[in-house]
Length: 426
Image (cartoon, rainbow, N blue to C red; front, side, top):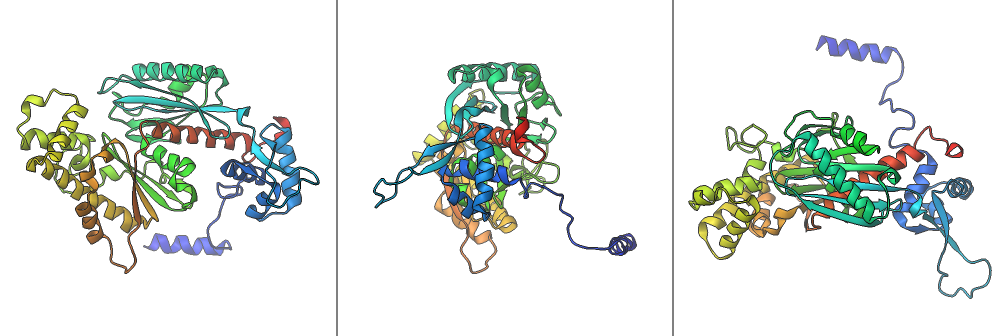
């Protein structure tokens, strides 16, 4: 404690107090970047509306949009005339993104399907591709080979070469150091602390951005879905594992080291069931598909089915539950109660306006049945105010790739228009 007091005294003796925010930090982007991103978010937008929404002068917007048009980022598009406009005078124009200026790809790697999309600079998907893969751990070289092949196929569908992609966003399950592009651990990769972003970048010759797959779902919702107009929300994914992405003030939150929001590995039972991460008592070990399969093998005496593919076994379990099998129903009900514990913790920690449940396993409505959500309500702090809304979104496999593409678009935009970039030199 003495050290803390001395540190405080030393700080105040130098003069000043309060947070020292770096100039042009993420929340202080150049005005030209803000203008471009506002237009992209709006689709088509008149200059006067851009100025009004950003709270800047019309003259500033006119000058900077001229630079953005000259540099090939924006273009003028005829705007529809308003009601009562007799067609006299200069036709109205709006600003729009020059969509074909740049293209990026988004890739999601999993233990069932690898998916990819190519999007233009306006964010529109122009091609998609999916390949089925064998479950289990993959050697790094095999994973990079598969990723390259997938990218070549989806680029060809978009009538592009890999060299015409300005960036590639990628997502994998597990623990990912996004800043360094390294996979610290993943259930699909047979090596720890692997520099996957660099490996794919070397193979394709393109810059690669890497992130945890649950973060990609949050980005997909932020860019394309329900999160576009919500400042604070959380996405909980239930697939082969349990993940979470959190958006705070319209920004994806990753934590100090980029490894935050691992809801699936929060502990719900001391010395509990073994999780695939190697620890015990993780939420994932009670909710994910391998947890349901483990319970089914024991409770329903399905030892003879142990060699079946995971998705086949889980579908069979769900069919039994729908048909009224009490043991099968109890397995889903127990998993739903543990999910309720996890969701209550999310509410108590972050107080989001919305929680989105996403992923293939959300087809199994027992996980979020009325009694499971009622359990969550009991565990949430009673403040007299209603709990956040909970929505179930079933986008399908391409959801993750959409988020990966948003990751790439964001990075390319920052590289082209962010602090320190000179439009005149581009």
